[in-house]
Length: 217
Image (cartoon, rainbow, N blue to C red):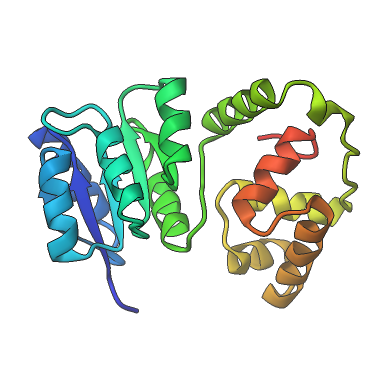
């Protein structure tokens, strides 16, 4: 299995050092570069072609939001995970709208950090429950009361259990092991879940199910 290249972007050396120590405890990942602001990060992204970027929001010279906007304009497909000290709703919503694949507070544990990185590299968005709730609240405020008039999809008990696992960042193989079924069975259930919810990805399935109160985290 090839190693996955991670770029850390944060203006604090101590934070970068700490992240490097944590990330490299997992043999799947290697830190290929560090940047103290978005301007340096954009140059390193071009040079180093990382598989995933851990990006701070509040930096001098060029902030994380400005960096996200620049990457969006360039149609850069490298997944970005926002890693910040601040739990600011507006910044969070804007960063996700610009394509961020995750939003973690810096006090998150390493297990969730690794799950978020792996999900981002797979092209999925994995959010902590409190952040997911805020995203849903913002979505409801934007849409008004129209969402309450939608028919609530009906999932089987097994589909709900599988979706709970998905919401916690479990892969199909891990879900199959815990449930005592084959990975193929889990994927078949996911296909059914996507169809019932009218979505085409794990992150959309979790967001939609939480919005309708089908699952709770």
